[in-house]
Length: 571
Image (cartoon, rainbow, N blue to C red; front, side, top):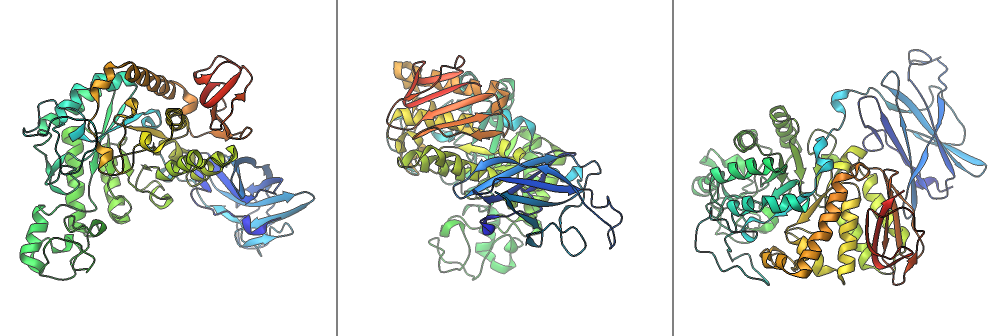
């Protein structure tokens, strides 16, 4: 038995409440483990702890949940009648077994005061992680406003709309009224969540260098246009999420200008990380005179540890919620703002609007931000990486799909997995169509996005297979004229079918998934015990039993799934 592979912590996500009565416990072992049991009971079952009591516990089998490349993850759910639980594990391989306690592994079962068992001391309902329930039923659509649609609310002087590469120095005139005009189209596509890149006043065209957090940028319109957009979106059944750029500001933000002018005498001095004053001209900040986002001299870093800045930003968000009735906030560079700020912010905003969705932009595993007192979810870039590895490395077996996706799922509690913001591309990455070798692979990855756990997001133009290289070329103009072509109509219809399935099937709206890899590169997983998903990522057709009528099929003739094919059908 590989003892080094055995691991458990009595904390989220390996010991977590899924509701106020239910506890999910997971255990990681090596793949050679044959079975695992939870030995558990109330910690006071045999008397008040202190010595002399004879605590025994009851044995509950764990189910094998995920197969990872080198590990197996086991899972069990229990409902402790008194809301607390003491427990140890028994791990079996053949005739042998080991017992895992909090203070180590042992050969023998020992349940007296000489060992330290794992403990869930009390299941407080207020500590249960509970993202907004509506999020798991949402299909998002991300819009980079300047490149989506002109509606007449923005200022003039934009460049002509065009196809092809773009830069961050070009303005094309998309605005909030243009987004509002296209809401019926988005609703028909199956979208019921809208994520807007920054819309508040800034010098640049990308608006990540905020000058005034209280004013909609004239490029896009005015506050009344945002009010109208959110109201009309809600009438179409679409929720709206804004981009909150609080890790840094732009060079025109009034408090920063005052610091530049007056140095330590400025009342806003502590809102920033200034190490030397007077400040140099804008440029690379590696010399360290002040901290900025990614060494960018035009984006000074905000000190979200400062109570005054915290209060300013919290009141700002409260005003956005009250005035515009927004449904979510996406926090740019969400792993660099302080935990203390996020906890204060969440408490205030959830009091104002309990079902507000708080999303962090974090590109790595982020369990520390997802314990119920900060974000509700993060942008799930690790899942995007897992899908890319499998589809781009043609030598990986089908099992590798489950290994890597399973690793992503094992990091978080089930209710968080159901609310994670999943995506294949964004304004920060190369577009999906430009990094896949064929349109078949393009649709396979979209099918995976819309059938795996999470709250999936489509980047604008994906329904038309819009191409685009690395930032800023991934921010091209929306090719509306392609809707009138045969190829465009076919692509939109395919995406509509996938989005409709995602929104209509309860099995796709939770976090339950089981992987059953087929031969070669035939991916097979089951959602909620109700839907089977097959993706043939290999080079040859894969025979499949006819089964029931498909819920969605592409490249399936009733007998075999073609290379690049997708089949989704009831179990």
